[in-house]
Image (cartoon, rainbow, N blue to C red; front, side, top):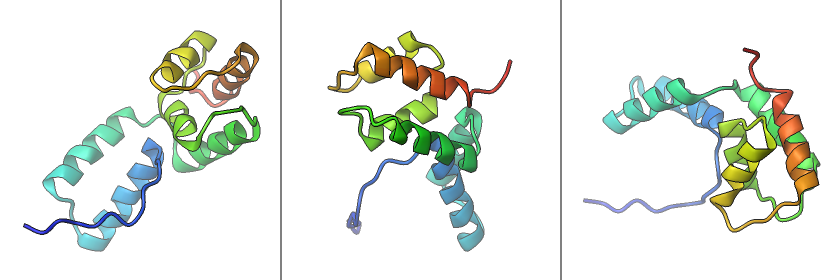
Length: 117
């Protein structure tokens, strides 16, 4: 069995994964078993389309929160925490500390993109 070589690694949001799977599906005609399972997961848990996810990512990046990296922003876009406490819970999974004022700004920004119930 061949061992694939990783060319680069970069974090992707669920919306970006969905678009990549669509491109692969068009190119190859169908997905592999793992591709189909991933597509099922992505379709079930994706909250935003690609354009809105990119816009939210851009707005969160423009907040210039210290120590908040791209992978943290992508996770926030995937989970869509609209409350300060939810943002804190997501960031607890990483070795990053964010001030309360920045957490509030993040929650407010995400709340503007959250689907209305």
